[in-house]
Every structure is written in C-alpha cells, then in structure tokens.
Length: 124
Image (cartoon, rainbow, N blue to C red; front, side, top):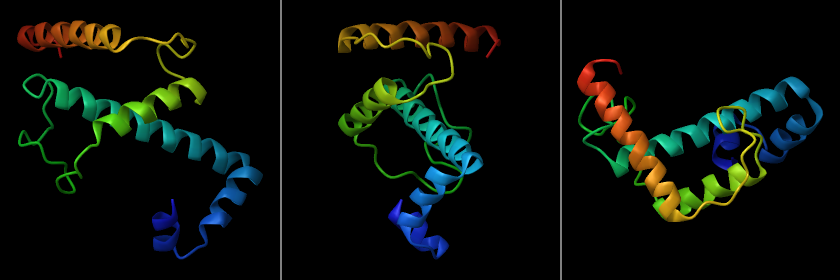
C-alpha cells in the first residue's frame, strides 16, 4: 500500500481515511482486494498443475513481465485469513468450515481433473 500511495504522490494514511469515509471508494477497494486474492488463488492453482493451467502466452510469464516468485506458505496464509475474515461474494461465499490440507488438495485435484477433461473435450 505504501509503495502504491508513494507512486501516486499521496500519503498512504490518506488512502485509508478515504476508504473509511467514502462508500464508493470503499466498494471499489473491496473489489480490488477481492481481485487480488483471486489472482493469488489462480497462481497457486497454476503452480500446482502447470501442465493443465497455462498463462495465455504459454511460457509462464505475465503480459507485463514475469511475476515475482510466489511464497506459497504466505499465499496460503493470506487466502485462509481472507476467507475467514473477508466478505467473499462468489461461489461458496457462506462457507467458513476449516478444511485440512488433504481436503483442499483433494478438492483441487478433483477440480483439475474436471478441467482437464473439459480441455480435452474442447469445452473449456
């Protein structure tokens, strides 16, 4: 946040004050944060099965350059905290049950198998 505020030429604390006082800004902030977490989830999925999920350019790099290495432990902690405290609006928004790593791994494996079948059948 500090780097973004500095790049915009404003004090980072002003950004938080704006978020707290402006409902339009707060809603767009929430959407931006949600998008950020969605991107972390996609990167984790892509790294877990790169042969199934590839970036559009096919070489692992993003459009604006190769992304920084992903700290997987930190990413999972962020996602867990976000799911616990955040206001998810998508599928499964109301779910709050703790899941073990094995349950999550099994769910991701099932989803990737379904995706692979869809890709092979040309439905993805």
